[in-house]
Image 1 (spheres, rainbow, N blue to C red):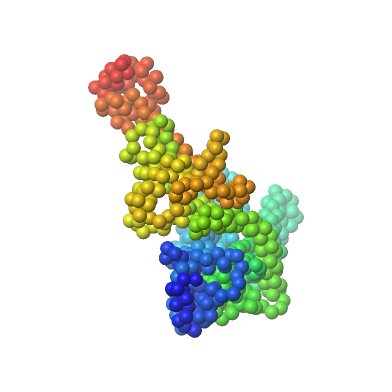
Image 2 (cartoon, one colour):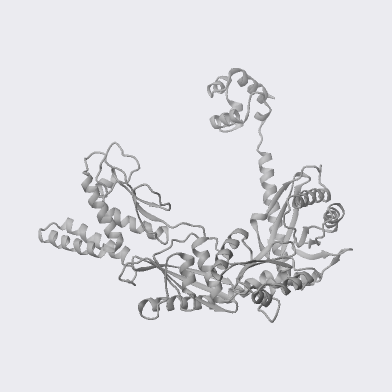
Length: 590
């Protein structure tokens, strides 16, 4: 622990608030809240912790705190700070999807649509549905039962839907407004839980049609009943009050939390959501943070009622969500909360093996690599590779690995601008200079390690720019390959030395993945550039033939070969001015 941290810990207030942990580059890596800031923040630097908390603490070089007047204020402030700074150690809910609704439009001839936007347009909206498939299945059922128009604009004659009995064909026949009003009311009743009554009515109609020997009509009613049972009664009814509610359950083990959410819509359990994440605070506090993010950041629809376990502060949850929050102690609702918690416990145990394997391949591999090189764990690695054919179409590429995983949004491509001919050393100098001049100018995060795909010459060229020209203190290492073009050695130090690594270790496999990825990215970019530059034609050399006219000619003739065989009159017929056509003929004769 550095002196700055010791001094700040000594003067922490014993009041509620939020704290922001920072790494050595000043980046906020974790935001937390506390009922008593002094106790909570000091706890990170005392006692023993599990591996992931030790990892967080090892990166903390500084912290800030904001005092609030209550624990509730701290919770709301924490959610806003997480949303603003997006710290890497906080819960990440990146699901920004919206949920589908079924809509009856307010047009003269209404339609039944699926939409993800609810507008104030006098239309009637029903939902939300957990996914597009559920909405589509329900809409198909309604289309069979209520023949509203399907087309966006009225056609000139009846379409197939009319012959299928799924449209009243307002394009040819007059339809009274009262008919539409009755159908809209029936749809609303059906979707608001009245489908059982509709099924009973259809059954009566089916029996009556059979008695009157109208067997085709009876068959239509029977088919509608079958579709209702297949679509609306796939799941056992869980509630009889048709209230939309979300039911939360959670489980905690080994510093991880799993939260399961059951979505109850119109009395049925229709979908569930599973979230698994590491926690660094008390379980109840972390759950409240998750609850706020679940509806704030992930755009989930707020139901009329939310059920949570007994261990959660119900008043805070209700104030946070601004909906009714209940903690059932018996009966069917209590059973559902227990079921959600049981599912969370099972999911957590099932995931541990995968999490352990993933950490071995990523963050622990990064820590082992740092230890082998005697440097700070390289949580952010930037790797470079050049690609060209005898100096032609020279390019370079950079990939970024964050915490042992590729961060593709940070990848960069470079066309070599100042180097003539095949000069890998100068190409590397140019790209390193361009990259880190911009990093310094735009105050972008510096990497913990720079890897060069190449030998000693490329490594020294990169280090010359990094250390001597730009004055940046970042370790620069290189990845050499063997005769079979496989990762062979890690070169580092001054002078360069081979860092001994077990070829079956996770840190060696990590280096292999980085080298393969940067090579793949560079080769792919080089092929794109080479392919684009090779798409040239003799037509480019003819005055008066620009890109559009060239496209026009090739579209008409299909190829330069057929153009060469065509007479002058045929070229003019293709829409080319006579003077330009003559130039084309002369050039092709050459």
